[in-house]
Length: 222
Image (cartoon, rainbow, N blue to C red; front, side):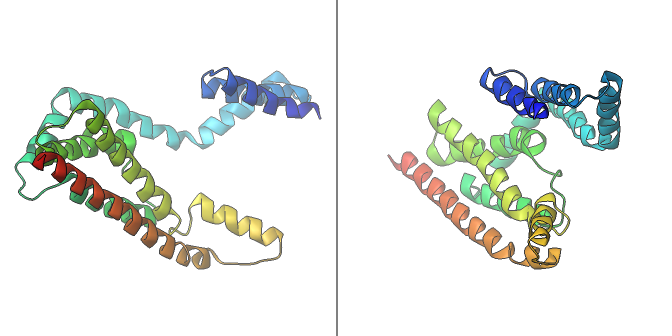
């Protein structure tokens, strides 16, 4: 039972608001020591895990690139582009992004878009510029609401789109769990039943974005 000390370390670390990566490393080390493993064996396990999943760290290269682009006026150019487009609204643009995010996620391209890659440098500034034009000016509270809606659009598109892809982790997890209870399903069967949920998410969030446009329009008239 001593190996369960790792769970206590995670709970204590999160309650004390320590860095999540440090908490997880400490928990793994405590679990390994409690299990009687040699410290060098634990260190070797850390190294092997990092080496096996090193491609995951490639995504962090995007962060400094995005920062460099922002420093050279990426957001300003995005705002200028949407300002020159007639009929462009925040809701319409975010609906288009939602469709794109869901479609890419459905074919497994979950890392093509995301908060650091697209929402912060492009999607949110474009939505803000469109909303600013619609409302004739935004205060800080309304600006934060538009940014939050842009972030939510990315989350919903990814969450409800990725389950359509056959080889996504959640589909494989569900299949493995059902197999343990003698229910044998192919991944394609689970993916097909994720499509109605994705459509429902698209319609519901699309309605929310339509309401956003209506509210911004009323702000301009008032």
